[in-house]
Structures are given as C-alpha cells and as structure tokens.
Image (cartoon, rainbow, N blue to C red; front, side, top):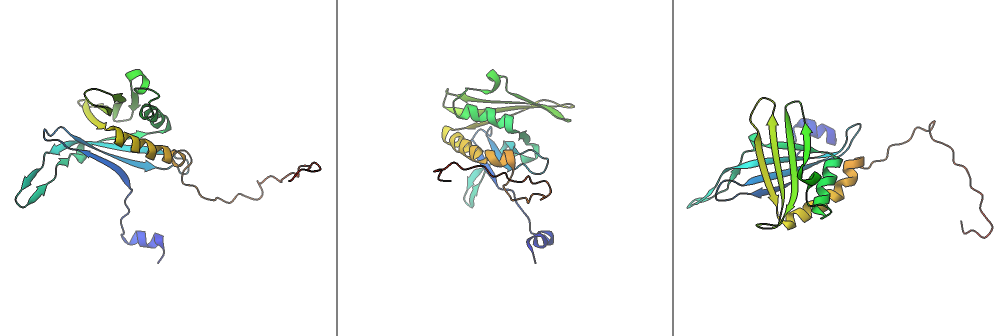
Length: 196
C-alpha cells in the first residue's frame, strides 16, 4: 500500500505548530499557536496565528492536577503574509519598536476588520506584545492579547527567519523543464591560460 492509499484509509495528518500557553491565576491569560503554510502552486506562503483567551484557571486536587484551559472555539485567527511577517521580524530584531509607528496592520475580510499591533515593551517587564482587535461586521469588537518574553520572541524570530524561503518559494522540489522551452547553451570563448 502506498502513502497516498494509507492516508485515504483513515490515518490522520496533523500540521505541526509552535505553541505557547500563558495561563495565570486571574484567568486573564492566553494561548497562541503558529502554523507554517508553505507557498505552493498559485498560493502564496503564510503563517496562520491562532490566539485563544484563557477559559479556566485549573486546580490542584488530591486526585491530580487539572490544567487551565483555553477557549479555542472563540479564537482569533490571523493569516500573516510576507509583508506582515517582515514587519513583525523588524520589531523582534530591534530595527523598530512597533509596527507602522504604533498604528499596526489592518486586515479586512468578508466577515471582519482586524487590527494587529505588535511592539517591544520595556515596562513593567520586557515583552513583545501582540494586541489584536477583531471587529465583525455584525457584532461587537473582540480583543486578544499575547505577550512573548524575550527568549520566546528570540526563538520565534529564528523559526520564522529559517522558514522565510519556504514561505516565499514553497518546499523545494525538482520540476523537470519542458525540453522544447529550454534554451540552448552558448559556449563562451576561453582565454589562453584561463583555468576553466
């Protein structure tokens, strides 16, 4: 049985994602997941970022620990293209303190308008803060917040930088050229004493 046939039999595939979970005792924490979507065919590459607010605090009980939970049903999903990613990387690299002089990125979709702000903050502690306001066309504005500590932001920056080629050009593969469209090579004259 080949790999394609095995997939159709019912083996689930999961897209790997980078995840951060910041729960707190007040219940005001959040979680964030990032998925890489390589460019392919006529589709540009992107990063999909999902942010969920903390739902429960969790507890310690004699039978074990109940972990905090997050409201993934009401998550905000952001599709970041190459331009968006570049601006966020500039903040993480220290080239600028925030995106668009604090104005952020504006995404308009059929269902909502989203404002994405990302900035380096020093007080009360150093963080890279992601603020997202999502205003559905037929509802109230929703606010999502996530802060990366400097080590999380540094690792995220490295991961995104290493993924830039895949976001821009997709997963490398050899695609044979049509021989009819291939140009013929022209021999270049070699000078006497030239090692080539």
